[in-house]
View 1: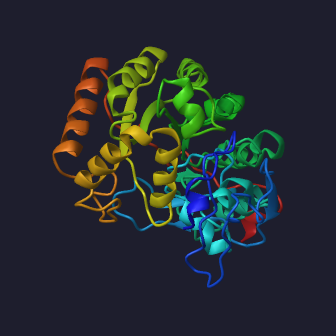
View 2 (view 1 turned 30 degrees about the horizontal axis):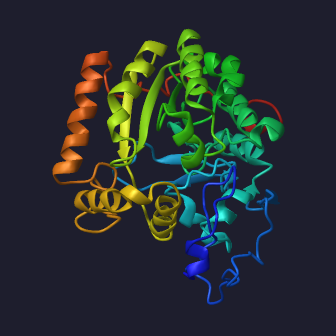
Length: 356
């Protein structure tokens, strides 16, 4: 990475500072020596691309992830969270993990129709499906395209259980569908709260809902009878780890009934981008943050081993886990997801789908 990229100014409403090279491409672009970007205008505009793939459900085989099937209407995420573990997946599309990930969004316009066809197949056996575990299903473009809502309409029609994790209060728009699913124990929603500090939220995850809006979403969801939890993620040492008790307490007061947490994950290009972010916003504590991350990751900035990549290891990781567990007990949360049921599943009707 060039020095000019390292010292490039942050862009308002964007998380990544630069556009690192795609690890699958032999050619890459660097910033000009004078610090101007010839590959990205400023301010960065968001562009949308059609996803023409014919499949919609993805089978997961990771033993430390609580779902086997998932659906992602969007690839890439406007929220711009600098730490996002999903950033490297954008490289499979020929884009960068950096600014491309948050400004080049691939949209599966027919996701609801493809989902309905999958659930109508006689070979399909009902099971919980995670809605956009890779990128947020309620990112800003959803307000206009409503792909997530249309997918929820299919889930509600079929009473197929679905799990949602989001940082966006837009989820409350779909209270009617979520309530319908909740009648059959077929939904749970986790609101991810990284910090209660509005300024930290602005620079860490710039296009997400503010902390107060997320707590309000928890209150509205739980008040509507929808099983709602809080996900404290990611936990970043020396940045937001001290907030764990306050976040748990605030979420519980808002009505959350369960909680989870994930330690910061920095796969592939995310690590150098996170270092850039620290240089830009927390240069005085950069070394402390990175050293503590390494202490939780066996001396590296990232550890991919199942069972440890979410929680880390070592004394600092143990302290985080203890702090989280104490906070959960004090708030009287159960620390577990609401169990989802497939007992009321029914295949879609109409269009002669029942003949196949």
